[in-house]
Image (cartoon, rainbow, N blue to C red; front, side, top):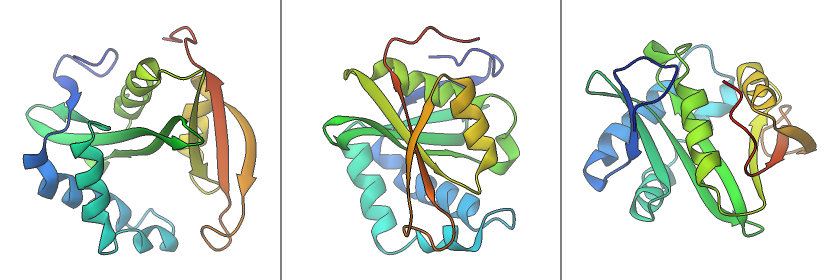
Length: 165
């Protein structure tokens, strides 16, 4: 699938197991970037590779390719109260501000089979807050204590929301 609004060279597709190392490297490069809060680097623990393998193996991970390069990935699963939860949206720094995160988010939300789709982000992640609000998500709560001093904001929206492009 070619992502609308991101240019003709961006393609969304299911991740494949052979991309595991590239996904881990993309994830690490984003999380260790200087523009990230310090606690973000805590996630690439020994389990990071296991999580990515699990998501890819279960068909829950979608990648965005730009000019043959892995530009980003996103994950949706149904382990959040048996509802569709977009658990992760990662876009490489060189590929940001091209609509890739929006395309990944829309793609997964459109695939959601439940009545609602959920997503969360940290209070410090204002670009993601702006994106989810623009895509029709409403904040419905927050969780303290996951990341010290940076609450996790929880959003949802009904499935079937009309494309806002």
